[in-house]
Image 1 (cartoon, one colour):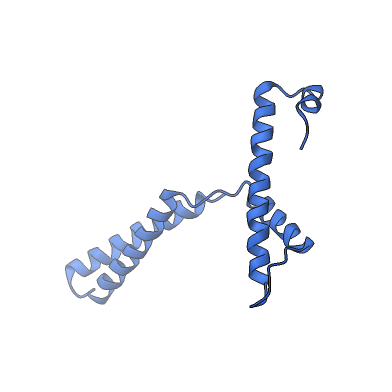
Image 2 (cartoon, rainbow, N blue to C red; image 1 turned 30 degrees about the vertical axis):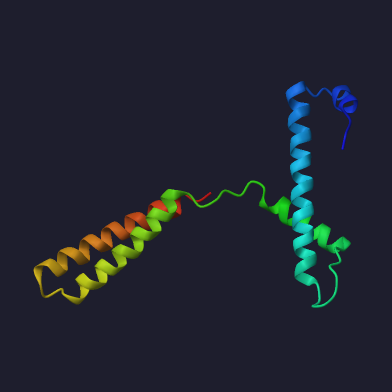
Amino acid sequence: MKTDQELLEQGFTDSGRDRYKKTAGEYCDTLYTKSLALGDRDKADGFPREVTHDHVKAAAHVIASSYGKRGTSRLTVICQIGEYVCAIAAGVGGSNLSEKWGGIVFGTGLTIGIILFVVRNTRKE
């Protein structure tokens, strides 16, 4: 970890230094926790845990690959649930096309389901 003097010499502001130290500390804690978990995963029954170079390297890779990933948005989940409901509705309506309501439920379920599918898939980045 860099000292306050080193950070000052490189142009870090007070808030930049504080954020740097906090982020480095959080990264160290996360790296430690993930390294232990990987060591536990590979440990043989009845033997003590060994956290190897590979465990630490794998933990760092897991952390690095998770940065910038966005979680699933609420809209995405709602659209997907809506798609399932519309598929069920279209199925029920399609099984009853001889009835007037069957055609309406089939067409409505299919149309709304397609719209939800398009909305969900065009929002992905």
